Amino acid sequence: MTNEGSEQYSLSVKAGQHLTIHINSSNHQAMFSIIKPSPFGSKNEVVEKARGVRRWSGTLAMNGDYRITVFTREEQDVSRFKLRVTLR
Image (tube, rainbow, N blue to C red; front, side, top):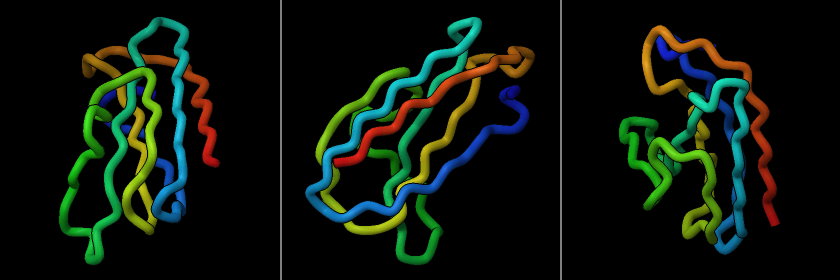
């Protein structure tokens, strides 16, 4: 994966659920952001303290489909990664 194209995943969540995400990558360059649900898909509002991170844990406030976007720090970086997602 390179920064020219990010990987995106969708996660259906109910308000009040607890989400934990951790990413490991071969060269420590992969990170992620969590995007809040948007009724019309027009806004890209990031969950608080979940922009360009390698670990995040918290309780989600909204129902809907959250997006997890994985990317690298620099455009030329290439990275293999393992993304661990736990939703309770």
